[in-house]
Image (cartoon, rainbow, N blue to C red; front, side):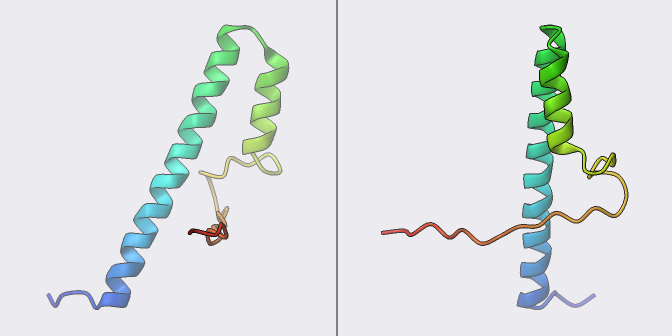
Length: 76
């Protein structure tokens, strides 16, 4: 097996970074939903659900594609 070229290697690294970010977001939403379930705050649970689930489909299921944009903040 030959080593990956730099563009292939970067692409794999970038893909893993994106997946890690998606996992962090999904875990955060789940933790918040569980917190508000414990408080019996169904309204907030529904609001969080509607922010994460798109057109009734969990983005972790199916063909949903996450969009990442470059960091546009100025760094000095």
